[in-house]
Image 1: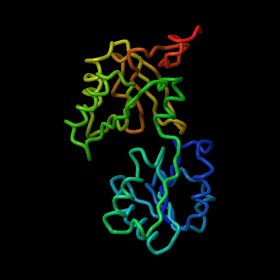
Image 2: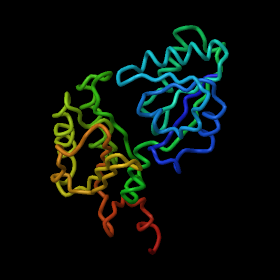
Image 3: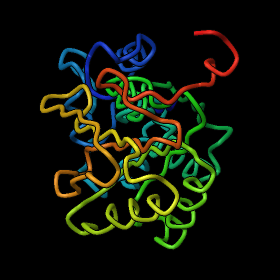
Amino acid sequence: MLKAVSLGPGDPGLLTPAALQAIADAEVVAGYKAYIELIPAELLKGKQVVSTGMMGEVDRARQAVETARQGKATVMVCSGDAGIYAMAGLLLEILEAEGLLDAVPFEVIPGVPAFNAAAALLGAPLMHDFASISLSDLLTPWERIEQRLRAAASADFVIAIYNPRSRKRSDHLRRALDIIGEFRRPSTPVGVVGRAYRPGQTVEAVPLRGVDVGKVDMQTVLIVGNSATRMVGGRMLTPRGYHCKYDL
C-alpha cells in the first residue's frame, strides 16, 4: 500500500486523524526533510524513514514506490494537501510509468492546504470563486503562468499565489502583481501570510499597490481579492452575495 499523506500547514492540531492513523500504520515514511520534521517524533519510532532535500522529489518518490512494491506499507508525507502542488500526482505518474497501477494500491489522504490556512488567518477572502496559481517556473513555462494570471484576473477571481518569490526568481512576484493590477484597483486588499500555523507566522493585509515583495519568500502565500473584496474590522471579506438577496 502506498499513501500520499497530507500534513496540513504545520500545526499538530490541523493534522487530521486519518493522516495520523496512516502514519501510525506505516512501515516506511518518506518525505522532504522539513516535512518529516513536522511529524510527532513518537510516530516515527521503529519506522524506516526516507528523506531527501529540496529538488529530490523524483528520487524519494521512486524509493517510496519501490518499498510499496515490496509489500511495505509506505506513506509519502506532504505539507498542506498532498494533491495540491505536492506529491500525489508524481507518485501516480511513476506508478503509471512503471506499470504498477494495478500492483500497488494507492490512496491520497486529504489535508488542510496552504491557501485554506492563509484564508482562515485573514478572515473570509475565499467566499466566492477563486483560482490558485504557482509562480514557480521550474516545471511550467513563465509565459503559461502569465497567461493564467491574466485569465484569472480578467475573470475577477480571487487569486491565491503559491511559490511567490525565491532568490532565483526575485522578480516574478512583482511582475505577477503588475499583471493583476491591470484588472484590479490599486486599493484591492491583498493578504500576505508567511509560515501559516508554524513558528514565525506573519499575517497582514495591504493594498495591492502596497505589497512589499522584498518581505515575501517561498513560505508565503498571497491572496489577492477580487473587485468586491473589502476590509472588515481588520479582516478580508469577499462577499458571497447574500446582501443582494437577503436583508442583512
